[in-house]
Image 1 (spheres, rainbow, N blue to C red):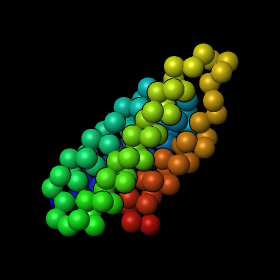
Image 2: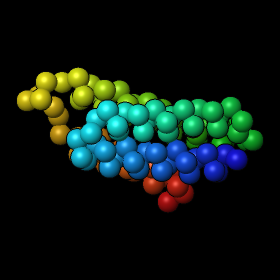
Image 3: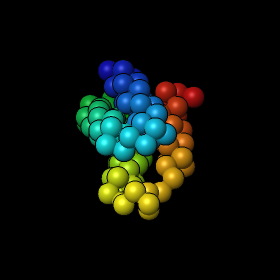
Image 4: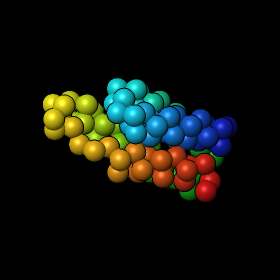
Length: 100
């Protein structure tokens, strides 16, 4: 079950990275929230301490990315930061969750 949930969270994170690249901050934030929620729920039922720790770290990365996405969405249009770096971070986390 943990593997399935992690894969679902990974797909949500990849969708978030895609939305960040498109400048769709609200959609990206929703995708990251889905990923974070799935990971936190999976951590509760993880069968080993190592799995639980790995999942908690991944959920923390999603939470951090959500905060940066919210800040970017709230910025005035002229001040919106380039989201390429955060999109790459989210993508890297998603790929890592997928086992690569």
